[in-house]
Length: 329
Ligand code: DP6
Image 1 (cartoon, rainbow, N blue to C red):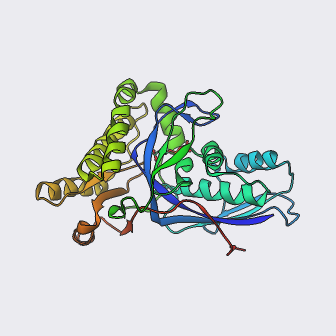
Image 2 (cartoon, helix red, strand yellow):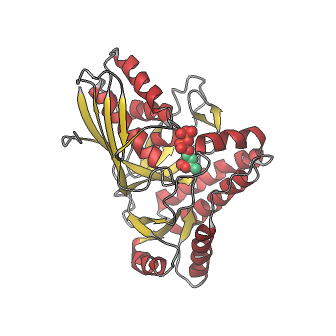
């Protein structure tokens, strides 16, 4: 009745932005990510303490604003397992929460694995990705290892909208995501509310849907062939397209701050100078710089000389979500 899980964050190379079904968290398009070694969340769930109510502690703070419906997710798992016991949950991430570093992905993935195990369910990887998806879409991609595709699926019930590894972490160990933290503030607009507004009123959403399958095909080919230029350039273009959607949504969603732009321009300049790197940005100001291991030292040193970078975390492709015997309480 007590279990602990560790899940890595994942950063999308082709983004998910928009749901065809909000209740079941079914996306309009498939997405591809890398599971990141170095950015993780550890969560312990206990159903056996005869607790009077559910309590959730995330990085030492009690859950107040339940943006991701964590309580509903716990209830969903309880119902699946046919139990009624209340839970005590403690969760810790080794990076800033809710600032655009995919903390909800690793958080919901770790919660799903720990809670389902603690509730007595023994789900396989595909089932875990589907259950994690119901907590937060991108969390489905934090269950498998390495390079991961979340299939948009066609079915109304979501049974074919799952995530799977398309290449193991050892397929391309030289691939790097350098997560640059430029602000530790919580983001002003959550991705859930933001993407709903985009689907509702962004005039360019059709254009996104028309081109995103080409990006998926290019990134899959690039990963299979270890073609860094193809993966990096497609990922950067895809991120810019997603942020163009955000900016042209009413009300406008602008996650970039001056520090974000400084890194974007620097990466483009370094590329012109022959140092090949690309950027990707999610629902927050942080920039993830994509490069190969051979250039990581030089790029990390250039990043640290920029005043705007508080900290850069170097992430190779990481493993999938795992159970752990060392509980947080
Ligand atoms: C910009 O998975 O956080 O990071 O499904 O509503 O919980 P919900 O949204 P979430 O959205 C992630 C959006 C993104 C792009 C991506 O990771 O693909």
